[in-house]
Length: 348
Image (cartoon, rainbow, N blue to C red; front, side):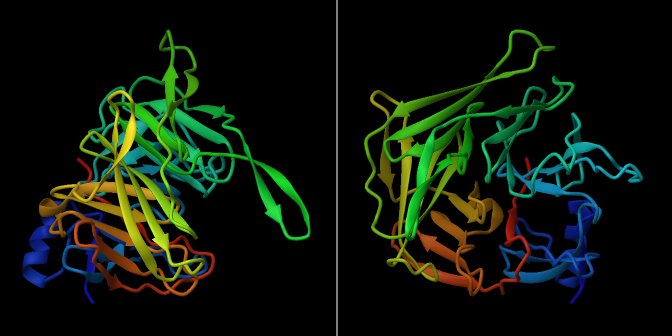
């Protein structure tokens, strides 16, 4: 199998593809190798032509990074003082362009974190939000405006974790799904409430203040059993995706439901079976992105979803909104201690 070098600008790689049938097409589903194995190459599944390729890593092996739904990758600064590259930046994997950010190092940010940007097009003032799935902590900065990333704790309440034969444990809630629309961040607070997150400051030298809010919405009935939930921004619209399983078995998906947020008064989630010429890309850690279907060679009005809950395989499914179709595109073997397959989409 030929190597596809993602350190090469896309134009050169596409020229190579025409000559050697090696694909440089995005979106890419990245399969990160185990930490104890050779990390000089990754395997990626190129979705448009459904090929598994060997690629050169787009960051050095000692750099931690977080993919974003906007296509850019947040590369964290190295805590290793001997490293030649200790900077923090946003990287466009497609053309290798980068945007410098205030320092945020890998020993500050847990591996359980996700990153989202407030805008598809990264520009001065674009807001960068990093939040931890495992604790109520987040980091925030603005491109070209802040000298450092600010760290914020937050409180969105608690829930009771039931334990067999013991009293339930009170656990703090934390962000799981976050998506930006028009510079504002939204998250799923409950089935009858949409959470909001804004950052305010009166002066560029001040640390931004995080402000939480909530929008009341009519209750959405969730199917019985286990349901995977995602919030997705697409063309400045906010969507909610439910993938229900059959009972308590998470190996095969059941019903797909998609809702669009109607912000007119009163706000409400409106069930829809049409997202037009778009495709949603979903994977582990509640990653959710949207891209042009025709522009990426994908099926329109479909959800491409990696089942990261099953212990057997991380199956890649394509789910049709209108006809309810379900197809397994590819199966990836699960490896303990390795991050589940994750998407890198085209960055604008």
